[in-house]
Amino acid sequence: ATTLGAAAAQSGRYFGAATSSFMFSNTQHTTILNREFNSIVAENEMKWDATEPQQNVFNFTGSDRLVAHARANGMSVRGHALVWHAQQPGWAQNLSGTALRNAMINHINRVAGHFRGQIHSWDVVNEAFADGGGGGRRDSNLQRTGNDWIEVAFRTARTADPNAKLCYNDYNTDGINAKSTGIYNMVRDFKSRGVPIDCVGFQSHLGTGLASDYQANLQRFADLGVDVQITELDVAQGSNQASIYERVTRACLAVARCNGITVWGVRDNDSWRRGENPLLFDANGNKKPAYNSVLNAL
Ligand code: XIL
Image 1 (cartoon, rainbow, N blue to C red):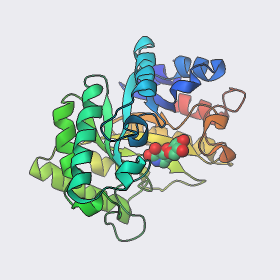
Image 2 (cartoon, protein in one colour):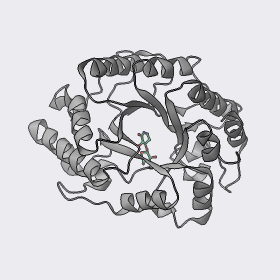
Image 3 (cartoon, rainbow, N blue to C red):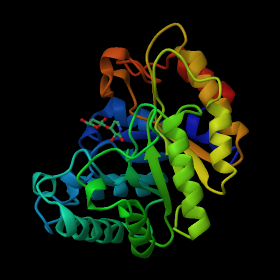
Image 4 (tube, helix red, strand yellow):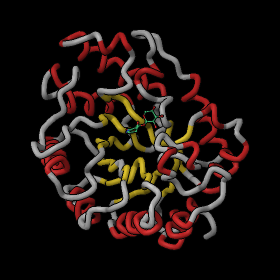
């Protein structure tokens, strides 16, 4: 195969990229996007602040364009993200308690309902665990509504879009550590109690090294009976960039329940980390050594 998407499809996986509807008018970006990737995710346009700028007033302008682009080009869509402590609209930031809980439920119902049947996998809850050694939840307005907010979010999403895979997504979970173990324990608990969860997303915003147990960590989650996905991959430019991309790709291929890989942008200049040139294509749209290492590993 000569493209990332076609190469990933050889093993039944997808290879995706984050993009934005306003980038579709950029010919170089969109030419690469359509040629190389068979899955897309909205970098920002499906987040709470974008989709519900005022309470109970929904805006799907950008996200509908993104889904239409995917359909027209034979791509699947990851949904990102229904609930998160960041990029909340101001009105939600100012809510608490029952009012916030009910707003969360309404948001999930309306957004997942709007896209019902069109999303391959939804990041239902994003980044709910704290960094550091505690392994516990992150403090947030959502967490302060009660520890059960995550399972309420997943049950609501299941009803709103019964055929989407429902994922928990987080970062700094690139090996077996306190944070990933906290998430692991939550997933194990959810599976034992029948809380609907289908997948765990590993954002994989990486620096110049990769945990030696990256693959083992994916595997232990898969062994709980959930799929795993690499959801926001980008790697700081450095002497190891190509080899880290290759190791991540090989890790996903070695785990039967790893469904696919999404990179968090197309060209280095599209990236939220553009100063680190972390992507597979340079600012001129040329393939980087990391591109070739991924293609060869798929
Ligand atoms: C980032 C986007 O790339 C930026 O454009 C935006 O300004 C901030 O959010 N974890 C996530 C993503 O789950 O939604 C974040 O995306 C990057 C970190």
